[in-house]
Length: 467
Ligand SMILES: *Cc1c(COP(=O)(O)O)cnc(C)c1O
Image: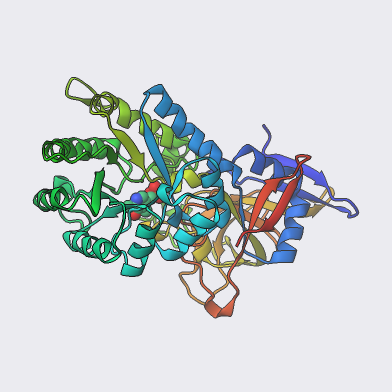
């Protein structure tokens, strides 16, 4: 496929083109790609109307992501409860899309809880895995019969007291979050001896709290660490059952990987990159793994088929009559949004490269928690007079604030033609923590608008506000 497309704008002598720069082309959902390449003019109008940056959310992608995981679960005949990790993106449209697929929602605040209820999520399909829940939040969770993951002995005691105070008529459903032996430096989860104490209390107070099972959530994307934590939980499960409790769930948290671009393309870039690829002449020390070798489905497959004892993890789950639970955030929002920046100005620097200023800041396309630049190329949409020659060049992308570090892409991007004022740069796949986690009204710029794209009855695309 040629990566250069041409489009005649209706009543203008110029042609709008969409072009991928050369090196780090991201994967793009087919429907989004068709829109960007077939209707660049419409995108340009949307930016005129709603401003830059513009976040466009695509809810259909969530169903694709859920379906990919369900295929693996079915192959292993494993019973699973999926919860969408709502903190990954502020879009109510994505919460709605998750609820529409029939999965639950993992909420971490009163606001996320309300969004989930508004989307039609049944209270019993809510879970709350986050630590340090306030009393007000716990109260709402209890009221809606949500599944509550207890993170510490203190939280355990508080919920016990609260449930008695609220005079619950049915025991509150809880999971105990376990801190694996290899993650002792973490501040999350209960140690094995703390779990033992909780089990004794649960046994005595089964009128107020009901143990549904155990939970853990780990950083990184290695299935092996999940298998190790899973293995450590099995004796705790046996112990709980010996005490007459009936845990049925092992919850392995979130942290399923996304592939932003092809692994080989990404690895090849990392192997070949050098100081000259960056505007400041420095190769960053590390990056978030944008092009790993596993998709979320591959990760789940690796986890379920990992050997443990005589069989696989899937076999163990079935032998013990267990339900697997997961709270994927990022991976369920794979491909679920694009972030569109309009170019304000382009400057040629003394080194011959260009700096492109966009309306918007690095807070709308950054890897907040990983101290990493978002290492993919933006799609460039530009208008040119028919027959005009391209002016190729390398450029880096800066935000519109006065801070030196407000840089969206430090890497020098190889543009077929250097972006000009009014052009659009589109970052793909920004739904997973990139687009709105750090957004703010610095300089009193308004927060970016978020639109939801969905299909009308005749298959036409409709954009609506997503608040
Ligand atoms: C953030 C979080 C998740 C979701 O993590 P992803 O990496 O987005 O899948 C799941 N569980 C817990 C406890 C979390 O804190």
